[in-house]
Image (cartoon, rainbow, N blue to C red; front, side, top):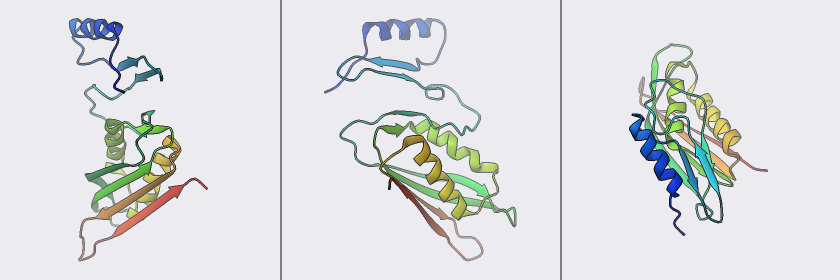
Amino acid sequence: MRQSRTATDKSVAQDAVLRGQNSVLSYIFRGENEMDYDFKSLGKAMNQPSKELETFPAPAQVTRVHFTSDELTSFCPVTEQPDFNTVEIEYGPDKLCVESKSLKLYLWTFREERIFGEGLAATIAEDLFAALKPHYCKVTLQQSVRGGLQMTAVAEVSKQ
């Protein structure tokens, strides 16, 4: 069943446009499940990384969520050389899903961090599991070839 915005939401949106705001960040839906989203990053210009992972209620029919990004960078803690990574994130939502812009800003926080790839995969999996409390979370991190070697690390966390 598709839910739509209420008349109040439309007037709030029109008021926001008149005040010069780019978008409205609170969405109120009425129906069987009343939901109120108040995202801090979605719809705003963001020029800073953020460790805050924002969430929203998971739709009942969604059993798996998968993200891929080739924009994850960090630094080797020994050589201080940059590591360029592709990350795949998969989780089975229970009650919450992660808002994708907050995930992008979260991944950006590692840009200046000195961390081994294995630790990076584990940290991302643990942070997502703590924020979402999904049935499972799997993070696969693949570093770009450096020194003739390519490393892939897989970190998995699940409910016991």
